[in-house]
Amino acid sequence: MVFETIEEIRTAIMADEANQAYTKAGIEPLFAAPTTAKINIIGQAPGLKTQEAGLYWKDKSGDRLRDWLGVDEEIFYQSDKIAVIPMDFYYPGKGKSGDLPPRAGFAEKWHPQILRLLPDIELTLLIGSYAQHYYLHQKSSVKLTDNVRQFRDFLPDFFPIVHPSPRNQIWQKKNPWFATEVLPELKARVTKILED
Image (tube, rainbow, N blue to C red; front, side, top):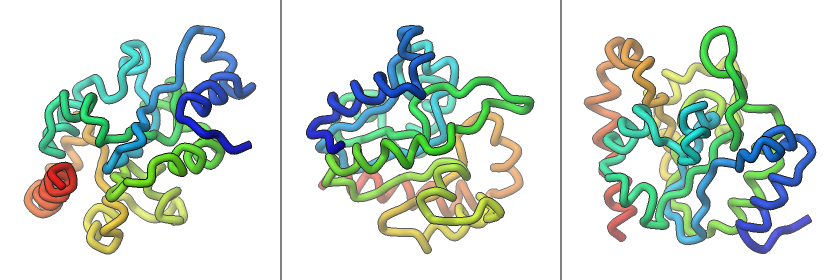
């Protein structure tokens, strides 16, 4: 079935049998897809805090992400230039070491439907290995650090980055080139796209 509006897609996602536990609990899918968006942010899945708040990237990770992008909350949430379409639109639950991975098959089912209605996307940020492996058509053995270091290989369409979680402070200390080489390029590209 082909949907004509984002709201039709949102309704279909909530009606999907695979999402009934969330829908019955009054939890809506957490994503943003303004049809005028120029930048698309694809992460793993909402965290518990953001799902409870009903607002994507409304946490410390989101604060850091906005800093990396060089945008404030008003631009991030209200400009209609930024889409946020994670690999799963619901919090997947807690695992042994952090959150569970996004559910298999979710992005395959819903992303193409949504992206068909977003014709102006110029840059897609791929945050974390799940988004990178899926959109860059990579095996799971490909390392996130290699993707981020070689980010220029995926431009102009995709920009792979590490998750902005405070938990990744150790990774950033081990990879100082991320702050000196990658983030300035990311911020410059985002600024240019949003200004055009």
